[in-house]
Amino acid sequence: MTLPEARWMARFATERDLLDAIPIVRRAGATDVDAATPVESDAVLDSLEIRRSRIPTAAFFAAVGLGVGAWWIEWWTRNESFPSDVGARPNVSSWADLPIVFESTVLGVAVSSFVLLLVALRLPRLRHPWFAVAQFGADDACWLAWAEPHASSSRHADLAAELAALGATTILPVLPDDAEPDAVENGAGSSL
Image 1 (cartoon, rainbow, N blue to C red):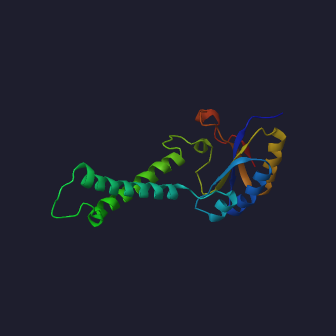
Image 2: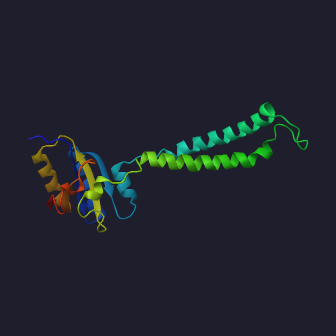
Image 3: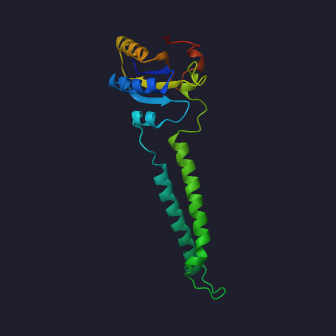
């Protein structure tokens, strides 16, 4: 029997068990593999092969663009829009423009980083499917999440047995985003 894509989470007591399980889940054909640990772990990030964020690069280009734009607006205002001789200052006075250019650059970094972070995390989002999983976040366990596209029930049972041998204490289903949170009662799934 072939099932539609199913999402699962497995609970591990230690980070070492989690690290051992990640390649097993990938070899089983799982997609969208992710993990949650009580503390940040470079080893888990490396094992998941998560690429670095492109937000800093995009924020840099936004900041440079706003800085150049601020300088251009000051130049245009002083030379084209409203040329005037104030205090015998030359029309192209880059030193006098630096505070506004700096402020615009800092504002560009702050606003673009914030907006790009919201877009990357798909926020605001009032509910994440992981929080509907029983026991998630209740202790300092490590969690592994994955999706099994068109997996057979026997293949899932084999994977669950392998994960149990590696130290998984619980394997629970993850509800889709649009499902009701009460659809899976506490403790549903396979407790190993």
